[in-house]
Length: 426
Image: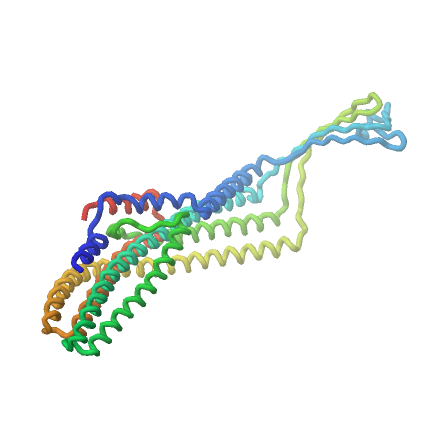
């Protein structure tokens, strides 16, 4: 029994330096998650969209090559006074040309498109950071919760061994009439409860392993004690990541609505064209410069503009809602962190005291000065205190990790903060 108790202490409270930095290595493995690759691809798409919006001011054009054979001869070239003096005709005709048009953005359509593209790119970068942090948080929380469950499993195994030995001892005492059958049934009931707890704990361990495997990409069991949570760092709630992401999305929606609204205005463009004809030995050419003013007549575009304006208004309302939700979540996480830290301090002292109480109670119960029910209750209280301690340690790390998702901390700083806690002596 004493050897089992020492093994639990070694597994649950002491640290082996050989395992330092394991969590940091696990977190680095999340870089291969498909969700991160998808977020990076969305950033690339936003960059290409912004580049395309910027190049709209360069205009557009095309090259024309056309060959035709007619049933009889046709006029070669374009009608002009010079061509009428000696008009060329041909049955086989080749036409080569180039045309180019440059928009004059007096209505600000292209400028609005560039602003929308820039806002979309900013939102894509923020969404990518959020995706990375969410995966890091998922891996961290599953890792420390799994550590807590494994520590509870080790403690429960020792408690199972203790109660099993107690059942065997009481069975012998019942045969010698030193104990009652009620004590035996009580010890057997406690053993059955521990077996039920072991089954429940095995299910929770499997669930956390599945979460960790999804985040990391491989199945593993943590090999070290739960790390101490990094210190809490205050942040301005208006600068939290959900709010800045919603702000960028609102700016993009407003710019897109402005672009559609300005597209209803008349458009102005300058163009140039050069065409060369080749038929029956004749090679006339023609060129032109033009300015085109177009007045759009499109009832559907007005409805699309109204829809975009409604979307922009919804995005502004969503930004205000995101700010409120971020403030609520930040305060809740701060409270959870402080509660977990207070529980850690209190439960660390309680578990030390309860271990001593159980040691004394075991000797007293052996000589009959304490009832078996009281002894089992003391053991159960010790087990629950130790389980709450591991849960509080995992809860502090989880609350800190979730707060970093709200803060929008860089992934490198996130991993470094946890790595520093792993390396710090305790």
